[in-house]
Amino acid sequence: MLTSWKFWSVMAFITGLVGLLAFGFTRDPKVVESPLVGKAAPPFAVTEMNTGAPLSLEALRGTPFMINFWASWCQACREEAPYLKAAYDRYEKAGRKFRVIGIAIQDTLEDARRFARLHQKEFYLALDNKQGDVSLNWGLYGVPETFFVDARGIITHKHIGALTWPVVESEIERLLAAPAGGPAPQPPAAR
Image (cartoon, rainbow, N blue to C red; front, side):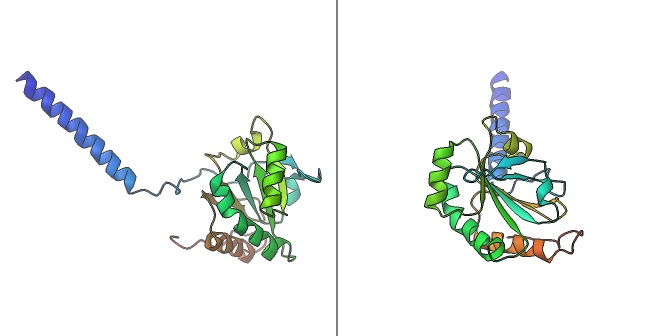
């Protein structure tokens, strides 16, 4: 009788474990709901790593922006680099009221600068401090992660992992289409 009880206990445990794993495989690991989406962006103050120009959340009020957290040692950051450059060229450099910001985390200034030159990152680039205060305040899980913020300073979308051009373009266009002071139009259901 005792053997039967142990057998069924082990079988129940294995069945539960298999069920949990099966459920996990149905989830997209890049879809992690952020408690920050729909809320005010956390304040930050950084210094551009090449020019020393300061930038803060307060200075960005009234301008929609994307803030990309990256690192020179990150393979996915290499993959998304052309899309960040394209976003900068197409929107900010072309005179549209939009900013592209990159903040390197857990990196050295020399490695971050080398990576930026290699990937032609001309947009505003900063280095988070050794404690990672900015990335911690933004609730990062890892790199790359990108947040899209409207002109009111509200986070409208968070993307985990390497960006693709369709995501970059649709999120920026949605931010630029938002009426001044109003909420951004709702995103499409699924991408």
